[in-house]
Structures are given as structure tokens and as C-alpha cells.
Length: 231
Image (cartoon, rainbow, N blue to C red; front, side):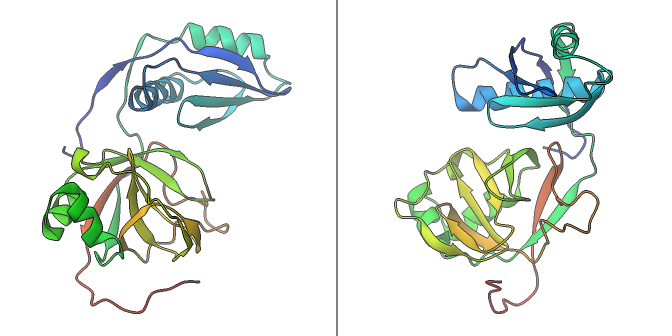
């Protein structure tokens, strides 16, 4: 997929649920997790393309989109009505600049991922490098971006036994997603590489290197492998 590629997706009509005094939760209906992600992306893109008065933040997740609003400007009912009235299609194209992440492919699970995928380690690396990914949402830890676009052969289950400590910068795959651990901690994803990119910096605006909607490309690092940074 090229950097400029775009796709038009029908915007779903979600269920609108109250969420406190200053937000509503939009819940999509989809037959499976992959379709749900597509619907949330389309809804998020539509709301970014057609801003609703009083809405101050959009927080996408796997099956929902949280819409925060200013109660002094609008109400939950008005926001819900605006959502229902959104144009029925939206271009699910990234409106943020492309971010390139340099990766050293030396992850502890690389050989096991290759075995389970029926590929060589070189083929795993090539397939991981090929797509342009998109940040669907952030979760699990500050700055942990769930990237969609993973090659189908690499959509593998999580490890049966999670690690008690994964190093910061570990590049990993699990189920539908690719992700990068922003800080040391426990985790059950399959580790295929590592990066020096800083995923979360409270002094940066925005703090997350990869906010939702960001297109991401991985490039293979030419640096020699250095010591792991476990924080």
C-alpha cells in the first residue's frame, strides 16, 4: 500500500450511550473484531472531517469511540443527533504525517513467529516491513499504539505464558495488531524486534508519538545491535 492510498468506508450508525456529564460513548455493531475496527476508524474519520460544535476530544478503541464535549456549549442529545446526521461515507485516510520507525529485528520470539507462520525469519521481516500501518487506538499503557495493517500470516495469538518484563521499545505482534512497548513491563505479545523511538514523552505535544489515525512505516535499522534498554 502506498503512502497516499485511500479507502472509502461506509460510516456506521452507532449506538449512543451516556458516559458521565460531558461525554457519550459510540458503540459500533459488527460481526467480528476486524470489522469493528474498520467501523470505528470510519466513524473517527467522519467526526474529524465534520467537526461537531462543542466536541473537545475523540478517543477511539476497539469497538467504541468516546466523544467528550463541553457542557457549556452543547449537550449529549445534540452530539448524538449530530452523529446520526453524519455523512454516510468517510475517507478512512490518515490526516496525520507518516511516522517511520527504525527497527532492529532481533526479538526473542522472531524464530518462533517464523515457525508458527511457516516462514523463514527473513520472510517474517519482509512481511512486517511491507505494509503502511495505521494507529487504530491507544491503550494498555500510555503511548502503546495498536497498529492495524498487519500481514495476515503474522496475525498470531498471544504467547501462552506472558513475560513478566518486556523491554521498552520492543516491537511485537499479536492477533490483529502490531505494537511497540513504550516502557518496560509485563506483556504477552510476540517480540520480533526493538526500536529506540520514544513512544511517550510527557513534555512533547502531543505526548504520544503515534496518536490515533497516524500512518506508520517500519524500516530496518542498519545499526549494529546494542545492549537492550530495560529502563
